[in-house]
Length: 323
Image (cartoon, rainbow, N blue to C red; front, top):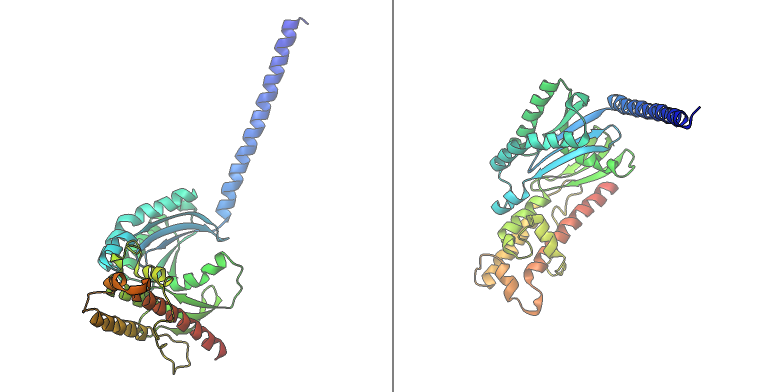
């Protein structure tokens, strides 16, 4: 055989082998993709939607608890300027962003609506106007895509969040504290809770927000971008937490319920008294700038209310544990 023919045969052989290898790789890749989609079909996938307050959120999760895709729109900056959450404004913002947020979560996860096993949405507790937006959107979504609906109690969901990051076994004791709630419960299972106690009046986050508004903390240069509770926590770190003596609420009760209105009343009384001493100023913000020795009274007061709120909840936990 001539060298030219031999070289040509060699190239044909290499081409055939290369084509064969490429075909094998292509087939292997096709099977891998097929297996991925097959496993996805076998794995239960849930779309979660949350609109209970001022955040529009959505996420896609699998049955192992892995978050495949998520998206969030926060209304914090809008409500911060108003000094608190305004329900009609929150409702409008939820309506404007819920479709986009949900689609972003689906796109990030790579999951099509047809691949979902169910849709889970917060239905209580929370702001009625905000909850309604998420519920209406979810109902339309499940009707369009023919998916089951799972109603979610969002405080129960908060209680179970720890199991996403730690191997906590049932039963366990959980204290849930937020701007609108404060409750103590025993979590016996995914949907089995024993309520031991709850706030009988105001939640701790609520009283912190009210005190922050009363003191115009939004005007404080260090707190202009912080919510009421965040502002108090920030300033409290700089104060003497033992400067003022605040009486802990419900000292004569041995149950697991909470009451925070008494703490707020004591703090408001101190503010009125200090304003009188300083010439009936509108807030203690002026008192910060004119107090001597660089130990402003506002820092001490907020440090005290923050400490006593935490101490009160810890004592309630101890009381519940021993009853």
